[in-house]
Amino acid sequence: MEFDKCASAWIIVRYVDKDAQFKFFPKGSVIEEGRPFDVPGAELTRAHGLACAETVIRKYNVTVSEALKLAQIAHEIEINPWAKHSRDAEKLNRRIVKIMRKHRDDPAKCLEAGFTVFDEFFRATGDR
Image (cartoon, rainbow, N blue to C red):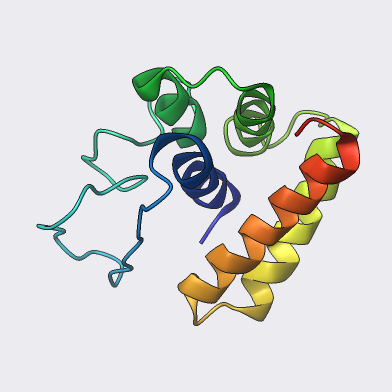
């Protein structure tokens, strides 16, 4: 799990399909069910200088400010990893990295904990 994948999933559940479910496959698997995202060859993935979260926003015309902000943060972290990041990007990335380490072998728990972090962040910033 990585920041962009977690952010993309959060945007999908919050603004595209509240009933979306995520299934995890071993790395290198050919995915022949559902709608793969953030994997090579998927329609929703990192491409052309965009983070996967930005691709999701464009594909589904999501215009909600918190989704746009999270996609921007995903871009900072995933597309410009060596640039100076905003305070929000640094803060969220630290928390997501900590979650990824804690739940390294359980991507579903990682995703669930990441969703909690994003929900808390937007409640605290008042962007919700």
